[in-house]
Length: 415
Image (cartoon, rainbow, N blue to C red):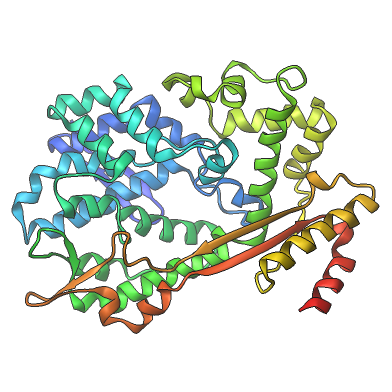
């Protein structure tokens, strides 16, 4: 049987060989319906409304993560040949780490109130299309992969770190891919130098050789910049807020006023009853169709929210990060007052989004340097990394364009 090749815009040809057991397992998993569904899940959710090229899918990203995991393992096997026995679990976990994502990826988690890690674990553990090939590869593989995805637990710490840490293959791929698809230049990484710097610490965990320090510093700065410029872009914040308001409004109005097909009805009003098939039935296409139907024939509150999204008549967002918590609430109240005076319904067009970001967390999969003699935390060797530990808070006041001028004049006076 000839090798299978996926031509990736970032990584070039990703070739999988049926004669290699772990790669044959990856091919079987790729061909399953749960994995093929990821073609219908946008990697960056509604970010295409801000960055028109942001159309890549979770399917594409997951193949990239598999590719990087294989490269990393090939490098580490030169130092620790015994890692080869973990190839099946690593490839499966890299490939399936996002299989539990709901519609519009992370935006869907906010909209519907779910956690994709838990669903990824459940699907791997319970869905026959995923569990059976994993168990056919080696007994216990399905549960091992599920525990790794849902709980971050695995017997080998180096393999675990390649799947879930502050320098895992997931992060490496999405920074490169999201930078590429959004047309930003911040996400360029010295990927080969980072992979070449991976090593095994005396305790068996993953570490970095000091020769890769600058490449890793650059990676952490890039991640910080991508969060500021793409993931937390003001219009992305607005779109996510509108999506969450839309689903909350549909849920509040209830099935007597809001049309939904069987799968969406379960997602909206009976989420505790979601089984595997009904969960997988919802993707960007189904959610998008409901937004379109609601925008055309839904109750007026739902119509307004859907049309803002579908016609890109977005709300404005003003940075209020410099204000105190009390001042932010006061200006939210003022935005609502001005909106009501302009004939708008404040609850559908005014909000406050606040978020803390940390460029590096030393206690959550913190990175270590190992030069063959000394093992130490990354932040101990890098002033730049230490500077990224301090959390920063961003706050956006969401409001309609109709009240921008008076609201921003008042904000400027208060600054």
